Image (cartoon, rainbow, N blue to C red; front, side):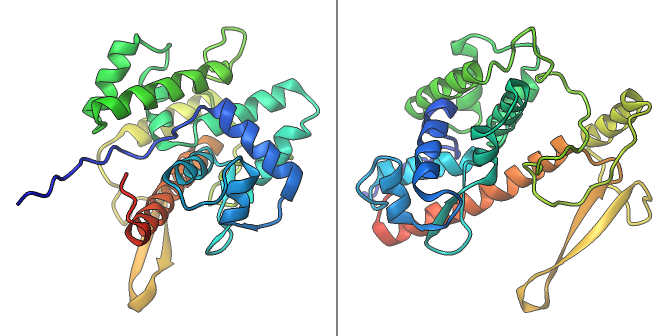
Length: 267
């Protein structure tokens, strides 16, 4: 065979959070939260249409960060969290939303969790990305976008507690994770509750059917099939964000692979 098979790198934003948010805010100024055809949304963020690989990559990046959603086939809409960021009355709220955007891509959430005390050198990060399946050239671009995004969100700012793994509780704003399953925890003994949830999250053993500390939620699938969501009874806002990010990542990957198949664009 003379065909050359190119390795596709894992899905990750091709631009920094700062650039992606700037483009999303421009789209919001034109469309508000109304769904728009993909070509129109591509024009809103600076491209002629959604048919080029560059435009598709940019739109995907905004979706990875949770700045765009796909309400229906062929349409995109600016997320409500972008509107909340634009009109946030307090800087603390804006920073909280920035961190939620930053943690939305599954790759970013994993790296921030692994390097909780601060980012290592570029050489170490590049090695980490290559070990995760990135081609060397793609790793350089992903690394640059990641580091710029972390700096923009001031994630490791010593004056902020946003990077610390503390439990979060619902407030008046819509949570980034949507209306996913969860429970409201009282504010007493949060450290103890978080340590229990953390130990459950790190355990490699799947819960049994009789495990009362987890809720099993059935999801009906086409063809009479059924899937189950196994949710721990201690389920925090950050857990919802991670779960939503994993689902969005799968949907985005399916969208891009479908477009690649139709247009002959390879990643």
